Figure 1 (tube, rainbow, N blue to C red):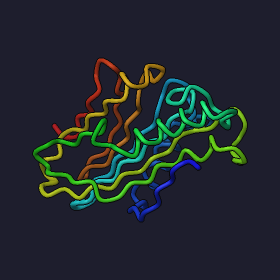
Figure 2 (figure 1 turned 135 degrees about the vertical axis):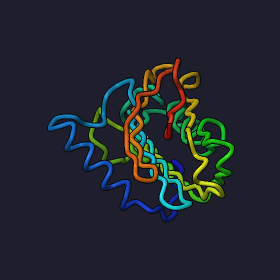
Figure 3 (figure 1 turned 60 degrees about the vertical axis):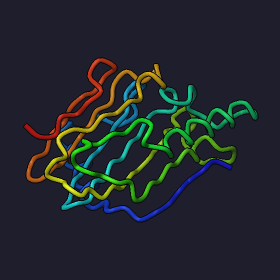
Figure 4 (figure 1 turned 90 degrees about the vertical axis):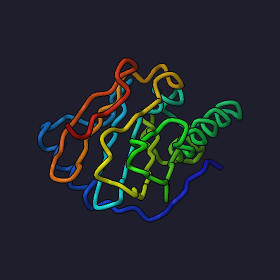
Length: 179
């Protein structure tokens, strides 16, 4: 009922990034914070991988299975928005990045889902191939106007030999990836 697009993604670097940053933040620091989404970005050679996880309350308006057809349509509309990243996810134009694959999972909101009650998240992954990866200097996330309950996005990144973290907000929707 809810769209889930599965395609292969280079995830080893993302997994290492997530584990390393989770350990750095210590126990109890989880990705599920209302009003805050988590994004990870890894540039490996010419491949740019971006993942996003957001609490349902921040993007759908609730964090449980849809209870009626209106809520199901709402989830479908949000999933469709994330399936079209060109509307909100913009790598530096000079890098010449083209979307190759995407995975959007809103299944936790589907009836019959086995998601933890009260904590359904939307998860999405995107893989781009960049013609000029050295020119990838920033990533713009235009999510805040469409999802006003989303107050910030914590972006963790690995680009070349650098790694870092930035918090984006409606006033600062652009992650600066290189000096």
